[in-house]
Image (cartoon, rainbow, N blue to C red; front, side, top):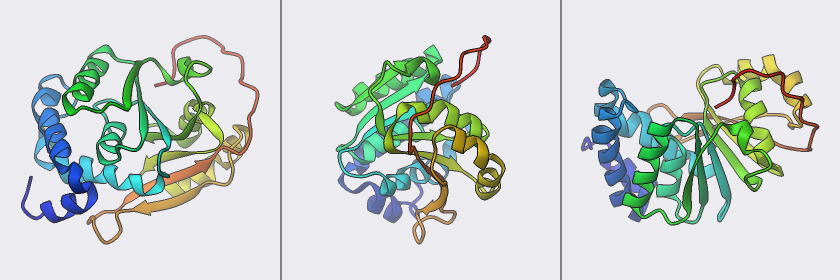
Length: 223
C-alpha cells in the first residue's frame, strides 16, 4: 500500500484494515493470474478499487442485507463485506472462474455473513430473499442495470449503482424506463468527499413498487 494511502485506508476500514490488506494481496496475486484484475491495475488497487468501493458503505444502513450483482472479483460486494461485518452480503456472479475466486476469498478472509451464488441476476429473482440494498459497479446502461437489480430489491430498498461522470445524463435519458421498473426518482450521491482525490459517484434508486415481470423473449442476457 502506498504510504500516502495508509491514513485514508485506516479511516475507511478501521480495525478491518488487516482483512482489507489480505484481500488486496489476493487481488494482485491470484486475481491477476486468473485474469480477474489486469496487471496494470495492481499498482493502483487501493485508490482505484478498494477505497473507491469501500466509501459506498456510508450509504448502507446498519445490519442491511446486500446483494452485489455482477461481482466479478468482488467489487464492490467483497469490499463492503470486509469493511462492514454487520452486513449480510450475497455475491452474484455467473462465471465459474470468478465464483471460485470469490468463494476462496470469502473463506480466506473469514467472512461468515457472505455467500457466493453462481448465476445471472435474472435467474436469482424469486430464489434469493429480496435485499435491503443491491449494489453494482455499473458497466451497463442504467435502464438495463435497473432491470437486473430492482427485481432483487425489497420495496423501499435501494439500488446503489456506481457510475462515473455520466450519472446525471443517464438518469435523464432513462427516467421513463426506470419509472416503468417501479423506481422512484433517482439521485446522484458522492461518497468519499474529503478523503478521495476522486469521490465515488453513485446513482441511488429506491424501489417504490412491484411491477409485473415481462415475459422472456429468449436469448442470453443479464449479469
